[in-house]
Image (cartoon, rainbow, N blue to C red; front, side, top):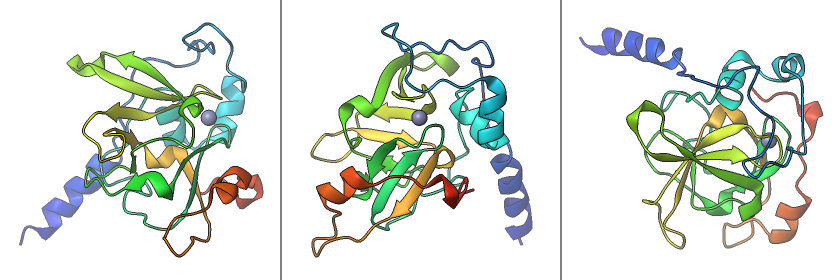
Length: 190
Ligand SMILES: [Zn+2]
């Protein structure tokens, strides 16, 4: 009869997004000192994002494992940043890591994301930021599958997903990836 306590504790954990640092004064400059192409005021960010998305994207939060979106999504398609609609990842590079977060072995193009050393919580990790809006997306680890050996561990709540048709090999074509554009009319997808 342990079902009820387990369920209750999961609900509690899922509502507890951890966030730290950042906030309204977070600089909107890239690590190399150049401004991010997409700049928004705090009011604009709060209007665009849900409170959970704001905590993750703008305050370097982390959604609890298995509580976000897309960690078990096997559909073919493209994943976009919720902060600026930039296409970041595709199903071609996605794998089921079992960690409870959507995982990819590489982004669509290496310059779609930025890598920043993160020493929070007593750990040394590499944080992944959106190169277009500066939003915090997740972290990258070197225990991923071939061909890169990398595991981009992303927060599903800050990604939007658009399903595309896959070819016979189960992959979506490069042309389809390059033409993929998130339609804001589809809403916030949350
Ligand atoms: Zn972005």
